[in-house]
Image (cartoon, rainbow over all chains, first blue to last red; front, side, top):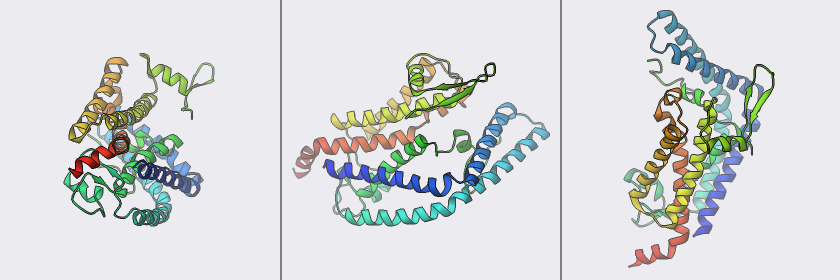
Amino acid sequence: MWSDTILIVFISVCTAFLGEGLTWVMVYRTEKYQKLKTEVEKQSKKLERRKEIHGDSLDKAVKKKIERDEEKLKNNNRDLSLVKMKTMFATGFAFTALLSMFNSIFDGRVVAQLPFTPISWIQGLSHRNLSGDDYTDCSFIFLYILCTMSIRQNIQKLLGFAPSRAASKQGVGLFGPAPGQFK
Amino acid sequence: MSTKTSTIERNGHSAKTSTLREICARAITKSEWEDKEEFLDVIYWSRQVFGIFLGVIWGIVPLKGFLGLVLFAGISCGIVYLYAINFQNVDEDAYGGVWELIKEGFMTSFAGFLVTWIIFYTGLHYDAIMAAKGS
């Protein structure tokens, strides 16, 4: 049973590198993306420092300054997400097709035995396309997703493509920062 | 692979670069961590390695069931807490509270732990598992 599991890890590593490679070629190395990323990092750190120093202050001027910084950051986050979005759609489409192919190859095949019984709402994923009701049988998609969660994140961090902690905390994304940031 | 952190010294205008070896040396001894990101990176990467290590051990023993999951979470968080607060003696407020330290890299290491646990459990005990299911 080693062969199936090792193969899935290998597929996950390859797809992670392929995905990051494509994204680097089409997004990360572009001047616009790099400029926006630097701006977001700078603003996130500035905003974090300001909140640390003045977070509990009731001064209206300080509050207004922080709100202005948040608004600027929100706009830059949105622009950053838009730059990535088109490429993400294209690579997402390509990888969905790739995943469908692997799914059909491993269809109905038990690739591993789980050392625990997953909770009910995960069983739909861990036992996908498998016959019988032994929920310790593991499907391809479940193991692949776990591998990808671990491998892709680490590859992004290793290669320096992951957003900084300050940027993540301020809620990097298309839909703006998380609400209730300012206490 | 080398992890580099640059700190520009004002006096000499020279860049001080912490190499991977220096960071590892500082990580295993009680040190001052001026760069918070560096310390959080140490926690993150050690956690990934530790998650895989625990996954291998759990798979070899084998440890099964919800107990394995809970033990992993408890040991992983406990060790990070003891390392950061007791051993390195960092100021938790400087990092936004002890929770920020404890959750650093947890989900990714949990995923890595599950993968290694599943792979080693299946690979080493497959015959016994099938025999138990058959009976």
